[in-house]
Length: 398
Image (tube, rainbow, N blue to C red; front, side, top):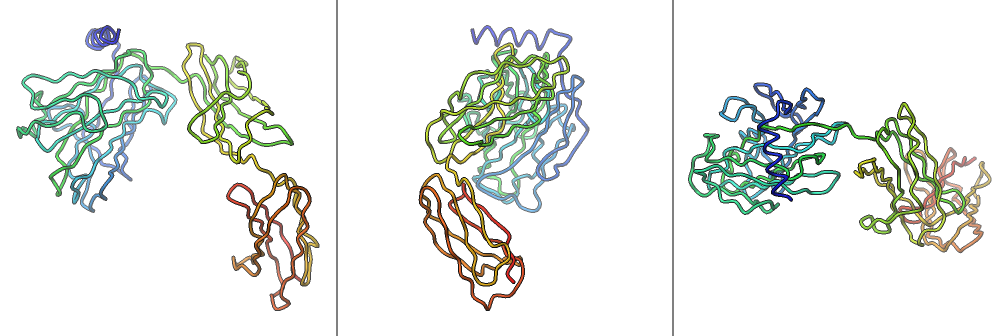
């Protein structure tokens, strides 16, 4: 079936009159490691960016594109990005996920991977999942291919034909599924020998047959605790094509499970909707992670940002009197036992009082005595019990 998809996709690319592509400017230079976005006629926007691992590129490094070579419309024309680097890796990200439009299926080419010092690998992502692709090497070629891998699956064979951008150093990448929505492409480029500037590769020739608008535009998503319930609120600006939603939770931030039942999409005519959902029965854990899953009518899934929520609680705190001379008290109603610190901090950030405290489950009353030598003015009393639990109150010393 994968071979069938690849054959059909190739036919679609080369035979259809509706194939989409980018129009490239004659040249461009990166600002903060990012090139200017490229926009196709159907609204698909591509943002190329680059970063290095294992080395900080020197001051003379540049990241630019140019159409001066045979690969018309090269995105990645690596002139001197990795100046001063050796045995490091460049990650070139081609990002479609910053806009509400995705290409369906993708074909593109990498040129000039024929120098013996060159090695690259390609990863393609859809909805955060790495997807399969096939590749074609042109004959005669000077590339040794080991397939898709972040460990540089395509390597120069040692024949130095670098700089020609001809088919002897060309790889064509084609996604197996012609209908998969593409979020991003990452090309890994290893700098092995050239410490004055990485050997050049060009990435060009982007083609796709059609594109899709994401079925949901999430305006906001929030999680709050109300007594024994955890409440979820989200606002949607566009949910055309959305079937339902599912709240998911995790205790470690990696493995997620469904929380409660699915919530059917409202299907409003203008696509705008507000949702409120509550759940009660969840595992006891110091911290829980939540995300919102939206599922469209075709079964495609999209995730919101992840929100971290403490499952521990200090129910109520109070510091009094609000105007004090040398003494005040802090009352804390707690659901559990905790250890932490109580601090009194001046508006200049100076800590004038600090004490280690242990809270018991239930009501806690903590008396505080301050030196009379501390100057008058406004202070903040702060309770710190781990990164998840804290409180603060304003007090005035007379």
